[in-house]
Image (cartoon, rainbow, N blue to C red; front, side, top):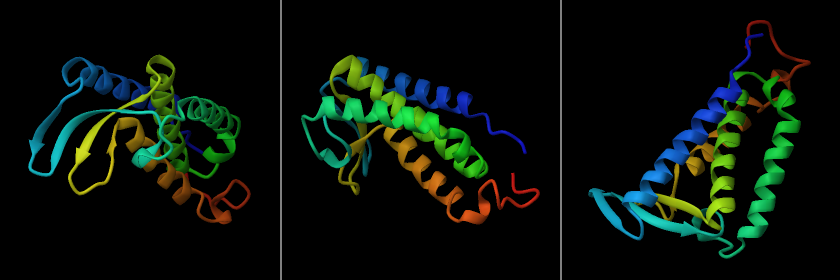
Length: 156
């Protein structure tokens, strides 16, 4: 079975998230810039989670995020045993969670900036990675036959 290089993907997502948020903090602080008719780069400080839910609960989400990362690292071999999609999803979730965790520790909030007129929330690279990663993990683990005991030859 080929192993998906999760650590490199986790690091790539984390660094991409840090670079984009660093640029936003330096160039876009407290501003919004129209890029396309349906897309803006809008500086936002989020102390809650997606869609602005649970505002001012940064400490809770800091602890929750750290716990999530710990649990995912603990069960990573089980997740990776489901194949490339689940493995890639795990890497995306971990990289994104670490990116947002960094923000919560360093700033007391998460820096958001992608603002689409047709979407109800402002978000960032880490949020995108977490969402895509969760979908990939769910898809990769969608039935018990794709797990380690029922893996078909050539699945991975």
